[in-house]
Amino acid sequence: MKVGLWRIAHARSGDKADRADIGLFAYDAETYAVLKREVTRERLAAHFAGMGIGAVELWPLDNILALKIVLNAALQGGAARSLRMDNLGKNVAAQLLRMEIEAPAGLPRLR
Amino acid sequence: MKTVRIGAGLGFYGDSWQPVKASIERGGVQYIASDHLSELTLAILQKDRQKDPSAGYARDGVPMLAELWPLAAKHGVKLILNAGGLNPQGAREAIAKVFRAKGWRARIATVTGDSVLERIDELRTAGEPMAHMDSGADIAGVRDRMLFANAYLGAQPIAEALAKGADIVLTGRVADAALTLGPLAHEFGWRWDDWDRLAAGLTLGHLLECSGQGSGGNFGSAGEWARIPDYAHLGYPIAEVSTDGRAVLSKAPGTGGRVSFDTVRQQLLYEVHDPHAYFSPDVVLDMGTLKFDDEGGDRVRVCGASGAPRPPTLKVVAGYHDGWMGTGMIGFAWPEAYAKCAKSAEVIQTLVRERGWKVEDSNIEYIGYDSLLGANADPAYRDQLNECFLRMTIRTQDKAVAEAFGRLFPWLGLSGPPYVGTMKAIQPAKELLGIWPTLVARERVESKVSIELERAG
Image (cartoon, rainbow over all chains, first blue to last red):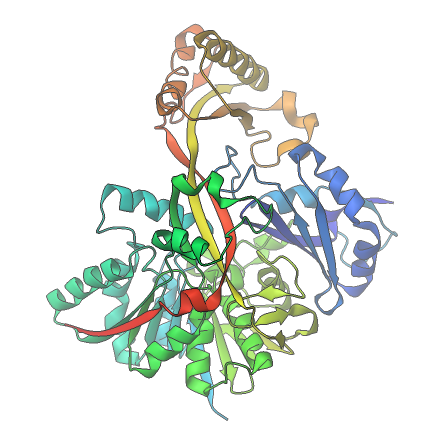
């Protein structure tokens, strides 16, 4: 079934120069395996295409059930130059939680 | 076994120091590590310094110390602040003045030498290209517009200042986590090539550097954020560290917020690039071997940091003038709130075109619809909004155009679509800064670092 990430995961984003970065966290190991399989660089690039971003980088961290995601060239040159309301990219994580992925029914922490 | 307790101070310029009181009074801390400088902050401080050469430091450090020092002195707590910003001596003078007036005594150390703005040409002649770290671009294209350039110093000068007997250490730009690693290295006598211990200290510094974000604040989630207890009295995180680098994260008893596996790991990955190579001036941390053990009761054990040798370069972040931003806003109520904003945007675009203004870039956002979610806003809500605000911004090299842009908006109140509400319709032009991250051989910076210890009061 299709599940919005907001129903199974938590996330925070921040900025470094022109990069937006996101930590995406599963509440449990079973969900982490699903995130690792479904949240790919290709899917992330498509999800954030509307922001006009550069390359996407992605690292899984099994020790903390998390994915580290970096969106390059995502902030109009950086917070001090950006014209956006969200110049610091604080809401990039909220945008990510809107992504829908294919997930098995009955994940432990499904909202 | 000896342990050292360090509490988070501020997490940004303008943050609250009220929670720091609880850490000093009830958290048993020996040090407060207070981070006043984000990447953006130096841009703000630069604007202050342009107006007044004696400014350029984080002004909140002065009232913060004025309020916290009596408490800190009573409990024997030392404070480490990067509130020096672009002018650590200016910050020290402002603080010393308060201490003299109050009749307080303290030994204040200032760490300087991080600024390389006045040395850019010298460094380039000496063989430092100072090319843009990400794009590789030549600095020559922005050299004339540089407004600040500061290297991130490490924890060594902080540890040295403490060894000299400082009660308060004031720095300019240092790696945020160095504010914590400095006192740990000083207390435990960690060697500067003991990579795993330095990595442990870096981890803890990183977990403390954003104040409330390490203890349940800004917990990015749907639903869970509402279960964080007592935001009004949220406690800042405290690290209790052993000599081997193992630590327990907690917060002062009776405070709000939450220290848990979830809140701590969210902060761990915050503003990190490659988690297996988290660079600092003192050590390179691999976060992949860290272990967190949530004991409950707002206590999380942290261990397992692995460190690799420090880099031969220091990161420098410079900022250069990059035009002006003009902003205009206008809001509308139902019916057709979004459509009226969109119509207004169209009108403004026509006016800008007719005036022949040179605009390099522009942004149209709808507050209440997509100003925070961008292209990931759900269009299903767009035509159902109770109300909506239009926010338009432009980037231009011409300050007069940036000023005039906002003044186009109020006219719409009587001559545009109906049911209008203005919100800061006219905003002054804002100077835009491009950020230039680059690398410089560390010895070229470190040879100029100095630590001065002065008795204030």
